Picture 1 (spheres, rainbow, N blue to C red):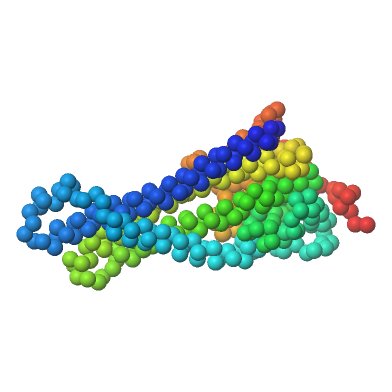
Picture 2 (cartoon, helix red, strand yellow):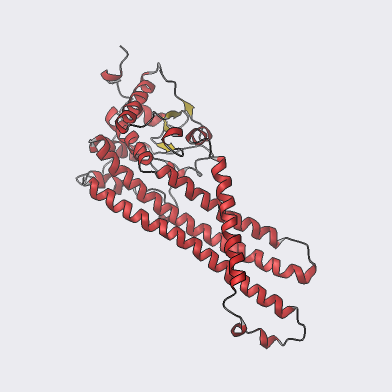
Length: 351
């Protein structure tokens, strides 16, 4: 596997997708400004009963109002910023909050269970190799599929979670591949990027909330209420469209970062067979996460933990076959049969 080439291509595409996110915000500001300009023109026409309707033509609208544009920019960015700050505050505890919301159980520092001890050993080895603090480790006891995630703002508050199926059904090499993938997210700054994008999306959603409030406002009489209702409808439409574009970009960004994490994990572990084997097993047993909060963290999982999306461009992960072939081009297209839970490796057996 040409993991250096894979990393370069993924980073280049990620940069372009982040730029698209900035352009989406610019589009939202432009749309709100255009809607505000039309509503202001409509209001001015309505306040002069003697003005013929013909004079309300589009050609009579001045396309540029610096003061209005300034208010629109300040208001739109203010709503998005406040919404993002609120979301950041909710996630201020770091990865532990995400893990606990998903139903994770904190793994003891010195577990007695053989599978848990092996998991702890692999995580500690990876942390030592990456020269970062050992993250907290959580086990999702109620999930029999194979999946994992990394969450947090930085290495200091990071948490790694894995399903019970991932802990018991993977060999040590395969487990190293999965944990290496999650450490790659940590080292490449993906967790920080994910939280920022979640915040921006929440801020865009706040535009629709304000639009709904304006739509149902009752003050100002019928004449004063009409512009507010029009602005509310505009914000609802623009906010909904912005959220759709944001979800599309977020999904595409997540797919690229998953490919980057796969390539980095191969470089990290020097064992492409381990990661490829884990992906093939997922093709047999699935990666379902049953937590009611799984949708909020879907882009953080090792593999899609929800049902297959209706539209492929809303998928947060590349197709499983595509990921396997990127690591093992000779793959024959068949998924691995699952053997009974593995025997404990000698290196992880108690002294």
